[in-house]
Image 1 (cartoon, each protein chain N blue to C red):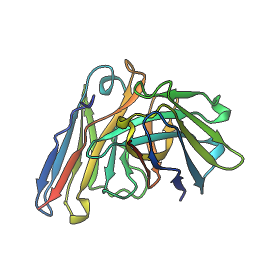
Image 2 (image 1 turned 30 degrees about the vertical axis):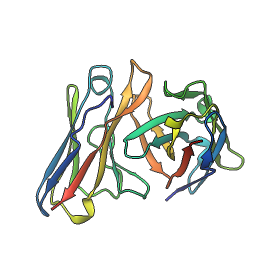
Image 3 (image 1 turned 180 degrees about the horizontal axis):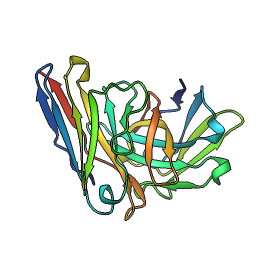
Image 4 (image 1 turned 45 degrees about the vertical axis):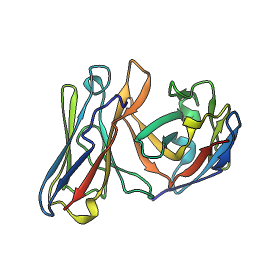
Length: 124
Length: 110
């Protein structure tokens, strides 16, 4: 069974930037769509964004609250998923989970593998 | 405020059944497949149900899902102490062009 391990979280000031990484193992990363999901303290899950596999075009999509401030990218040679976050706000404080995103041609979307998460705190 | 509506908490005794509702609209549940996730705090969440009612390998058949119109339900039968967790529904919302989740339901085994 595969594994996802996130890193890069920490404390950052409002307006700052941070890049999260997720190392994938145990599955064909280059063929997988990948995604980031976050959970603010005491809140529910919130989708951040996704990236298609390169064979499927490699395009990205983002949730409205973060669009324009975050970028999801991938390095298939290293099996690493990234989340670049700029212009961070206090409301971006959350645990960020790396997930494998399962999407079918008939419209089924789900997150079938999750990492343990990395905490991002935005505070002055 | 989450796009999908779930009860904040439910409880039941061991061996009993609990059903978790997830209510949405025509732009999300009404036109997309629903998935369900189990999250024990400080651990990795896991997929319980996808495509409304399908279980990934390794998920016990005590967990089942269903969908009708703009609502979905997760049922857990034969409740066990290990089932204490937060449960989330999720789906694609075509109006928002975004994955949306419910606010989560905390299940307590009495």
